[in-house]
Each structure stands twice: as structure tokens, then as C-alpha cells.
Amino acid sequence: MKLWEENIRRVVPYVPGDQPKGERLIKLNTNENPYPPAPGVARALAEMDTAQLRKYPDPGAFQLVRALAKRYGVGEDQVFVGVGSDDVLAMAFLTFFNSDKPVLFPDVTYSFYPVWASLFGIPYETPALDEDFFVRTGDYKKENGGVIFPNPNAPTGLYMPLDQVEEILRANRDVVVIVDEAYIDFAGPSALELISTYENLLVVQTFSKSRSMAGLRIGFAVGSPALIKALSDVKYSYNSYTMNLPSIVMGVEAVKDEAYFCETTKKIVATRERAKARLRELGFRFPDSRANFIFASHRWAPAQQLFEALKNEQIYVRYFHAPRLESSLRISIGTDEEMDALFHFLEEYLKGK
Image 1: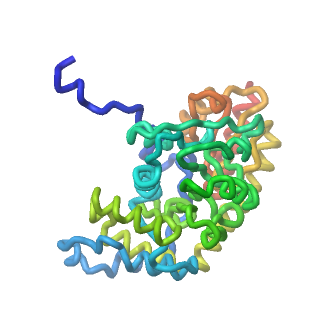
Image 2: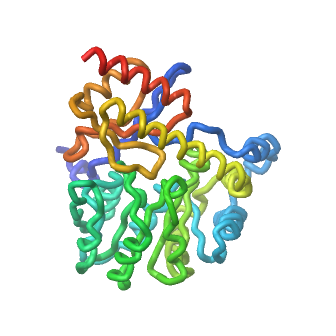
Image 3: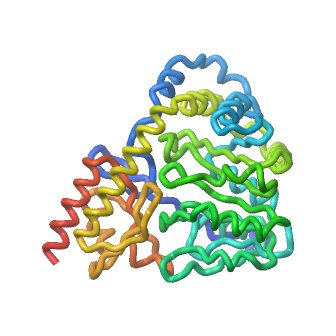
């Protein structure tokens, strides 16, 4: 090893889902929304004054912050925006998890958490989910340097009721607790309902799933003014101009169209419930997902073989070669037509085995 190589920071990176190209493929592997963004988003793009692109964007993205504060009934000083929820979460790790005590998050969860912890030198522990993939709230009642968990969890899709979220919050008033709600709009009540009670609670959401804007990278956090100020201070010390102008402008339009938002999320939930019934008929088992995906294992067909067979037919789902996950496939909810194509292939494939 050369001398300069000894000082390179080395981490095990997060591995994103495949982004295959092609016109005839069915992409059910990265939990994207199968429907287009709200109509106002396209209009905003068409009407955008491109001359403005020569200037730096508003570093505080205040136009979008105002829209989000109004939508969620909080103060503008309680909203932070970033380049996708990954950016917001990374800033939150950097800002709030600076204790010598370990941060706690589940052993089966969003696989970026251990990456950020390793990158920033944050000690962590991963309490095991129970045999049915549920969080054991008692595991989060010990001394720690912070708590983070997704709700619904990923990749299981299981939703934790707010009384259990609050149980964790009550036990952790002296550290920051982050609830990562990337999939909350397909699930149930949000921990945003608890913001006014717990000043140490940060709730993070994204436009990538329910608002159909994964390509624009918009995420946001809601919390007490003190938490948001701390996040902003770190952000401005790292990169002042994180969100581009088109994202700000189109993000505002997405927030405005509540009717379209409700319509598309209801469609996805309806398709998800229909998919559960069909997958059960085909011999699959899975946790009761409340997200826009299903984490399914077959009674006898190996998950990796199913994954490869589907891929050969240009149907992409997600396979995790990891402990406790390798017997299952994560299947994003697409349109009814896409899901029917998936079911038809699975029926023929399983029939031939």
C-alpha cells in the first residue's frame, strides 16, 4: 500500500437498487411511485424561466419550506429541506449523534443507517426485531446516544402504531429520536402528531414515494425550532446551496395538489391489498405491509432463483443477500397492469416447478 492510501477513509457503501433501462421492462425494485407527479409539476417545469438557472438557488428553499409548513400545520422554523430524505438523514446523523454512547436502530432496517454511522464514526447497536419482524420497544429503553427507526420499517413494510412510537419517545427524552417516515403516506397516522409534545423528536419524510418525485430528490424534516436550527447550522457549514431551483419550484406545486396526492396514494394502497391476496394464492407469505411494497417469501421456491427468473423476463424486484432477508423478495407496488404481469409470470413459473 502506498503511503497516501493509508489515509483514505474506507467504508462499506450503501448499495442502491438496480436502475435498468428499456421500454418493455417492469420495474418493481426501488419503491418508486408508478404514477406521474401532480399536473402542476409539469406546468411549473414548462413555465420555468430558465434564465434564473444562472443564479444560485435560495439556500433556505424558503418557498418550499413555507408550502410544507402550511401543509403540515407547523411553523416555518420547524421545517428543514434537503436533497432527498437521504440527505436530510445524513445531516441528522452528523448533527445529533455525537455521543460516545451507541445510537440504536433495528437489525433489519434501512441499510444506509450503518453506512452513515461508520462514515461519521458513530458507535451504534442494532437490537434484533422479533421473529415476526416487529420492533421490541423495550430494547430502546436503555442508555444510548440517540434512536432512529423507519415507520413503516424497510424492507418489511411493518407499521408501528403511534402509542408504541410514543413509548420509545417517553423512554428517550434526553437524546434525539428520529422517525424516518418515507412510506408513512401509505400507512397510518404520522409521528408529526407528537412533534408539539416532544421537542427531541425529528420526523423525516420524502417526495420520492407518495409524491412521485424520486428524480428530483426532495426530502424534509419537521421538528422543534431548536432541532431545525441545529440541522441548518450544520448544513450551511457543509454545503449552502443543496437544493436546486427546479426542485424547489416543482416541489411547491406537488405540495399544493392535495386531491391528486390522495388519489394516487389510495390507488397504490388498493393495488397493494389486491397484490397481497394474489400472492397468498400463489403460496407466498409476508409481513402485513403498510408501505408501497411487499416483502414476500415463497413456501418452497428459493427467493434468489425467483429473482433471477423474474429478471430474465425483464421484471425487476429487489433481493437482499443478507441474514434474515435472503429468503424474501421486496416487490414494489406498480400499476394494476404491471402487477398482473408479475402474477401471470409467477403463476406460470411456479406451475412448471
